[in-house]
Amino acid sequence: MEKRPAKILVVDDERLIVKLFKMYFREKIKGKEYEFIFASNGKEALERLQADSEIDMMLTDINMPEMDGITLLGKLNEKKINIKTVVLSAYGDVENMTTALNLGAFDFLNKPIDFKQLESIITRALEAER
Image (cartoon, rainbow, N blue to C red; front, top):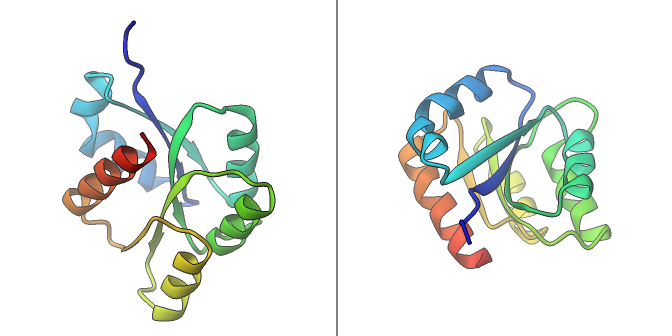
């Protein structure tokens, strides 16, 4: 049986993020290692997670309209949606980081995104998920 690509939900309201991910991970996307799905806020992310049980992990920004990343983590816990989540933030503040990790985030990464570091976090999260 053919192995399906790892499905990664990226939650961020910055449209540039989509381009950056598609550019950096183009080889892994072409090689069917990763499949990225994008949502622009926490509300949209919850809908996608509830509609698709095959999503393997999630990367989420903190500051977004409608529902921020911290609220999203809380909702995942409420709804018992168990998914490895990496929180991305332009504001490297300790309070958000601590809150995110206490709510079950797998890891925390500051923006601008260091894609090499992100790639290694994704690998670790997917291995932990399997």
